[in-house]
Image (cartoon, rainbow over all chains, first blue to last red; front, side, top):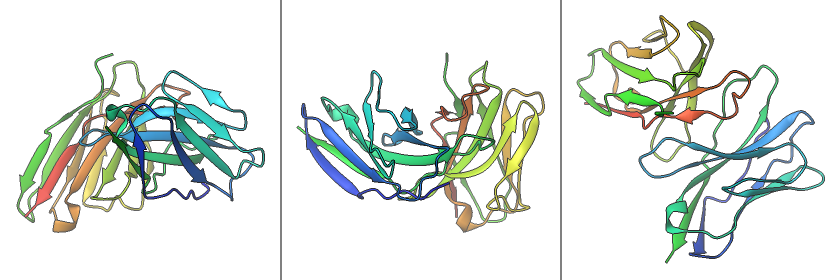
Length: 111
Length: 114
């Protein structure tokens, strides 16, 4: 699986959009980008994933650059409950069951 | 969907003792995973099961560790002769067939070895 690079921490004001970047410059053609988050004292939670098109669900939007070397997770209207560690994971979906987590970005939503 | 449950939530043991953790996955999920997480790090994959078959084990899973899923439902993770370096959060996750990327995690068992 390709390596990812994320900033260690970010702050965002409550109600504003939180934009979390991830670099994955060695991503290969069959690797997807996945985002999970881990709220304090809980297990990780799946958020969203994509291959090359932008994706949106009820939790977030995922923007992947055209060269696929980076992506941004967008939480459109951040709330205090979005304070968590956010993990960007690049994974080959063929025959690969495990998730390889890095150290993620600690996002703090400021009231 | 009652979620993934793990028992116990916390375990304190003395070095050299054996411990066993239990994980109950979401009932219709045939895949079950164990991860370990130490402070400040992301979870690290240990092993996974498809039904009762253990299909992959990480090099992190030394011979002191053993995992089972005897009837394809709940799973146990046993650590023999615990060491202080085993202190960590042990996370269990499950997923549906064909959606391994969407893993549902339990709250974890925090192990402290004194």
